[in-house]
Image (cartoon, rainbow, N blue to C red; front, side, top):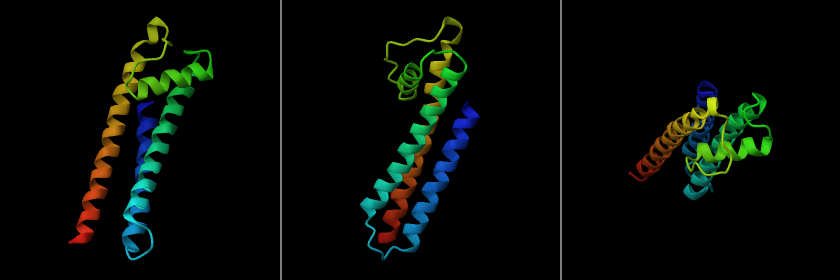
Length: 127
């Protein structure tokens, strides 16, 4: 799951780079920096949502949770590291929720680093 999540995030971050390069190449266009940041945030949110869905699908398809809704709810609670939810995994699978949270922290960190890089490049446009 970690490899699949990293691959998904890598693909999305490539989309962020392409989207930003398009802005960079057409900095005189009508597209504002705010629009660019909203677009980038949208790409990142979509990536995180797909990653939640991947984890939820695994929980459901492996029979760990017996309802797609329960799997999605548990996954979003684990991925967002809130840990709340009312659903719990069977005893021998309980560590998986924490592992999803660790994985998500890495993906959130990656997104944060990408946002910081974009903001720095935007500020360099002013120089």
